[in-house]
Amino acid sequence: MTRTSSPRKRPPRKAIRERREQRARERALHPVPSMPEPPDEVASEAEPAQRHTTTTGGSNLGVDALAAGLQSTAQRLVGAVLGGAEFSSEARPGPAELVDLAVNVLRAAATTAGVPADDIEHQVAETLAYVRRRLTGEYEVDEFGFDADYTVHVHLPLLRPLYRSWFRVEVKGIENIPAEGGALIVANHSGTVAMDSLMTQVAVYDEHPNHRHLRMLAADLVFQTPFVGSIARRSGSTLAANSDAERLLGEGHLVGVWPEGFKGVGKPFSERYKLQRFGRGGFVSAALRAGVPIVPCSIVGAEEIYPMIGNMPTLARLLGLPYVPITPTFPWLGPLGAVPLPSKWLIEFGPPIDTTTFGADAADDPMLVFDLTDQVRETIQQTLYSLLMQRRSVFL
Image (cartoon, rainbow, N blue to C red; front, side, top):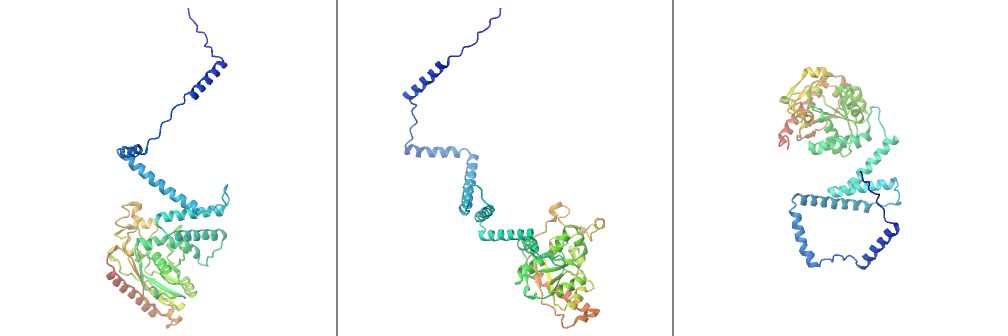
């Protein structure tokens, strides 16, 4: 026979309320004593024990110290930012206040990193002004596609770390480049990848007192390459044709030409600093017709950035390239092989060769053109030998 348990009866609400009141009265009559504060002597004696216990934690001490350091740095950074920003609205800051806050963040970060805060603020101001001009269309592009605003604020700043810190370029004879008016700069070409032209462009703008732009003459392959061609146009390059060169020189621009072409860039490392043929002297004809001086330019250091020890002609033909190089790092290291070696660079601009004494008709005299071409080539070659003697080391 199964025995069923009767349901449990709950006490009445009145009894529950009376028990709660009774407990409250007992707590009021007998309060729980609080722990007394230890005297100063006891606290001072307990601190070494606590420090000893923390020290025995081993890795916990390092984590705590790191966290404390990060917290202190963060507090200083936030304090500097909030101390420099002034908000006119406590609820929601406006665009001007957000910009002010961003500038103060950068200033505080620059101060923490040891960088002058004024330089950071100046760079931010220039960047914002550049963005505004791009959005409003307040910039000019000439008939050749040259965008001076883009070149000054984007193209050259991207190249300066290579120029100043990686290759540590030293420039001589910058005074031989005219302060104004047209001139033709003729330089040797090398390096497997034509970085010598880019470094020369930075040297002319940064080192010349008037910060002149160098308009470079480039091969067809440069403008046929996606992305590279548009950048070359916007940064001042144009097609290596006599007509374009004469127009630029006639308008008073500095024009740069590398007559060796791909034969100079792609020559093997065993033939480094030995100039190849300078073509048919078309650059001399352009200078004679425009009546501008020719400035020889010698570049040492570019030969060592990608020492070319071999070539893959079959792959080059398939890709439509003049050559596919084999270097000590490429293709063996994959993408890392594309990093240029940090060779020491020297660039020297020689005394200008005057062409005005010959007259414009002299451009049609093949013997005169040949003699001037040979004179420029020999000047560059001898200067290269001199610079190699002056350079202490390939990488120092």
